[in-house]
Length: 321
Image (tube, rainbow, N blue to C red; front, top):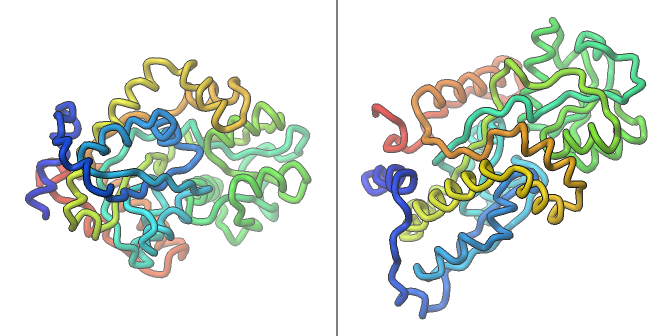
């Protein structure tokens, strides 16, 4: 399996997907289950149906499964309900702790400006230090969890100094509007929507911190099966979609606005500052960065034991190994 997969990354990144045998399409289609979040550009790939068109000649149909954030997506992967998906950096760490059978297959550039720690416009809070004793909402196990941890540490605080409120984005937005929480850490497009629609004030962003990449991963048994032949097709499709997005941010914002039910101005802001559209191989430096995230969570007691990120990365996809 590893020898086979070692060839997938350069194939997917450097070359277009070649013409595939149409004979496979005559049989009953096999199902590839893809998990996505509304905040990711996989939503756009779904709308274009480019992945379906490319996999049909191989005899595969695609089932798209939507999740509110990364942790629920990985829970679904653990139960066997998802074959391929994406999240920010922290969720896979929790997944490793819990024994979820997944493998890292690709990543993106870091996008620290796409996450913000927000307070109401008229809030007296001015700095992270002011959060002491306050109710701070974020999705447990998400990139926002790490974001808050890092900013608290810089301010000489810890989670013991605040009242952590674990909420998914939609729930947190409602709590923010009602005044049930004092601050909210979240990613785009929820971040941009809160800025524009709720007039939220930005206390700080992720600028200067680590932990703001996206990772793509797959179930181990999917990659151990003949279905692994779909991986280069998936990666090539994502790479090309990312290029289209980068070339037309305004057009992408308009399309996503229709699908998300948000104003185009919100998506223009979020798409204009994100760097998640690139597709990169997982290098030793990126593994080391992700290991740093895992070590931070272990040191803070957020996870019960240490994990080795490299245990769940295909060595064929790491430069120099």
